[in-house]
Length: 141
Image 1 (tube, one colour):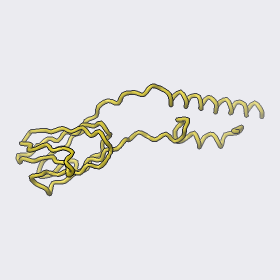
Image 2 (cartoon, helix red, strand yellow):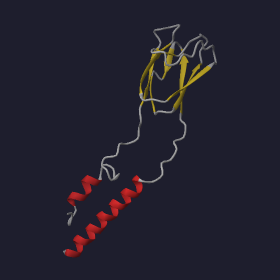
Image 3 (cartoon, one colour):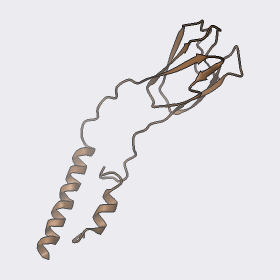
Image 4 (spheres, one colour):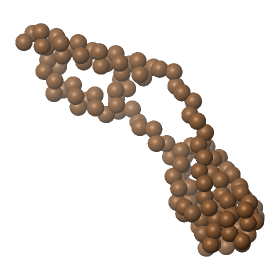
């Protein structure tokens, strides 16, 4: 019985060391991401898009009518986009960005910028399962 308790203790200690190693590894640089919005038939497609900070969104007018992609709060303005023209903007901060076509204000859409990185669930960097695994193990102190 004592050997089993020591074995479980060693396993838990090993898991904690692995968690510390993972937590203190050198961070990697995220690759730039891109996303596309199509302007056609008096609509933005998709009308709602969720991206991560640092993503560059490109709007392309694929219809015959001139349109714009204009932030409701003045963050960006594509100015007039003729058929086939494109405009890009990089979203650096989290938030919800509503926009419209300034020529046709009934054309509305939004970009939601949020991080998809999971939050650390404990100070050891072990993720959401560390607190669920350890208490149920025999020999847990």
